Each structure stands twice: as structure tokens, then as C-alpha cells.
Amino acid sequence: MSELVTGEAVALELRPAKLPSRALAVLLDLAVAVIAYIVVTIGVVAATASLDEAAQAALSIAMFVLLLVGGPIAVETLSHGRSLGKLACGLRVVRDDGGPIRFRHALVRGLIGVIEILMTLGVVAVIASLVSARGRRLGDVFAGTLVVRERVPLARTGFVPPPPPWLAGRFSGLDLSAVPDGLWLAIRQYLMRMQQLDPQVGWSMAERLATDLAARTGTPAPQGVPPAAYLAAVLQERQAREARRAFGNGRTPDGMSPGGGAEAPAVPPAAAASVPGAYGAGEFPLGAQPSGRAERDRSPVPQDAVQEAPSPDRPTTGFVPPA
Image (tube, helix red, strand yellow):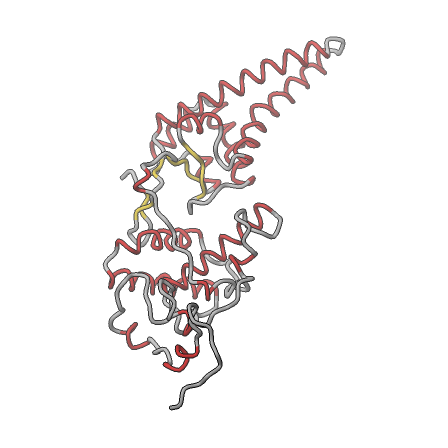
């Protein structure tokens, strides 16, 4: 199959790259690296002509390691998996969960790439890619990465809906270190495809994912929060932490506060239920009501709590009508 499929039978939009496109990208990267190596070596040799042969050989080895090994590692780290060859071929290196790679991923890929690409002329990399079901070479296997096709039709791109505003910042203290990448991938793809699923199937899938996530974090899901809204809120918290680690300024790239908008005033679920489009306690993102155990577990919204929420179109005057 050309698409990645999660454990919840949800298709991943990013497709693994084929061997010919990967080989062409590697050849372009090697050509650029070799040209840079030759130019720099000629300049260094001309500048150090007075040195002895041992010093010149040491400089040549240093240039080889710096340009042909350190160069690709630095480029993939700074470009988040897009080297010149991959950019020309529409490819990108991502983690197994679909997120951007970091320095440690690029380092492992680069060091193993010296053995399976440079020293063996790419024979080991080709054999490993042919044997792997997703076309991964040894560097990808050890680094936990995957080369995917970044250029996909616009109509097939997915959108992860944001969580309801009253859940913003509610899970800022949750421990997410024990959640595996596979579960994050399943949650993300479920949220992208939940509008296309059967309502009952989507609700049961959301309950299973929420149960697995709560078991990994060690904290049960809050009562009265729909499973899809709970998954969206925790996923946004994880993305906010990733953004803080990546940018290091305590704020996300779009200017949001840490925790995905934690500075916004908290709205109780009862009041959010009266807001159109919100993931309130009485509204479900799949457009259908749950059945079975999920219907019995739902707690009704108190009528007086909904009446106490002020209307945005009419300010509160303080007058209380007689009973």
C-alpha cells in the first residue's frame, strides 16, 4: 500500500517515498557535497602549501568529515528533514509519528549513512529499502524516522480540529512522557478523519483512544468531557510543549501562550454547551449521539447552569424575573 495505516485502521496522508525518488535525492545531495568538498579542499591546500604532507592529509580528512558527514546532518537538522535533494524531489524526513526530526535523528541517520551509502556505494541502503515494507534504510530504522512524499494533492490534506476553548490549558500539568509515538499518531489521524467515520464507530474509537491515553498518563479523563474533545485538548498540549522546546521562547510560533492558550479565561462545560460549535458536554464533534454505555455515562447539563450563562448579544441587567 502507498499510504501509512495506523493501528486504528486510519490512513495517514503522508506517503512513504519510493526508492527511485530517494536515490535521486541522495545523488543530488552527494553531488552538492562532493563539489563543496573539492572546492574547499583546493582552497585549503593552496592556503596551506607550506605545511608538510602529514598536516595536509589531516586537513583533508577533517574537510571530508566536516562536509560529507557533518554537512548533511546540519542541513537536515536546520531544515527539519529537507535537504537540497529532498527539497527538489518533494521529499522530507519525519519521525515515525509524523512529527519533525531533531538533531539526534539527523545524527543517527548521518552516521549510519556513512557506512551504508558512502562506504558501500549505496548497496546496503538499497537492499534495506527493498526489504523494508515502508522503504526505510538502516539509518531510518535506528533513528525512528521515515522519508515521505511531501507533495500530495491539496484535496487530500487533513485538518486536526482544535479543542473547545473551555479545555485550553486544562492539561498543562499532565505527564505525557509515557505516551508512545504510535498512540499520538493514531490520535492525530483519528481527529483528522473523524468526520468521515460512522458515528458509532467513531465514538467507540475515540473511547478506546481516550482510555489508552488515560492509562499512559496515569490520570483518568475528566467526567463530562467527550472523548474526542479530550483527545484534541491533550494533543494540543503536546504540540504546545513541542513548540516550546523547538523555539525556546515560551510561546508558540503563532503567538499563543504556553499550553495552547492557557491565558484565556476558563469556561465551564455547562456554559460552553450553549455556545454553537463548541465541544460542550451536550454536543459531540461527530454529529451524532453516543449509544449504549456512553449514553448512560453522560451526565445531563443542569438547566440552571445554562440559564446563568450570560448571552453575548444581551448584557446582564441584574434583574431577576419572578418565579
